[in-house]
Image: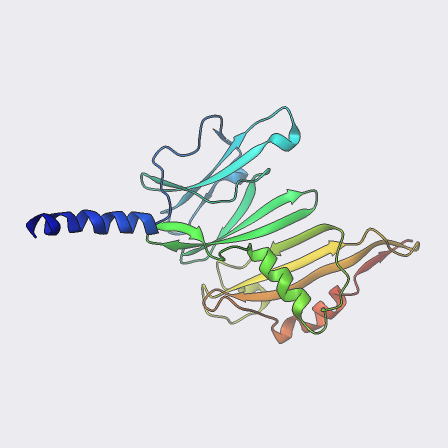
Length: 234
């Protein structure tokens, strides 16, 4: 019995580590170099988290790899997934939520959401990216259920305002509660008198507390116009 009592703390520690995100004191693997681009360096509002982006170069453009690591004190955690481009980031004002604005190609972008848990930023939307969830919500609405699938320049964008609850949009929302996402894209085929046609900045709101989307009434008029977006030839 005494031996069992002595082993119990070690068992509890093992279970805790197994349930926690993987931490690394060494950071990225060999071959990845910290970028010196100041536009790719981000720090949380409370100053506790610094995001570092590392690139592994390649003679093949499609072989270039980027990793993002969150440094908190002497701990480093990779913010997956690994990508082919550097990324932009925005924190909420309380430094508890983090959105990654990830370029995936020319004019195309995905969004990934992370949440601070036990001192570590972890993926907050499980198996799908935040942008995948936003697109699923878009195509699941009555007015967009039959909206034709876009072909290129497919982009999900996080509107500025996470730091002050979107006051510049005239909102009076609680702090650290909502994200405003804009969706857009274009079609390969369009009328000859049209230069571009597709979806032009359709907006929705994501609730960080409930994990659900909605469309505030204030977005309705602009969203209706976004569904018929096109640029005519002059």
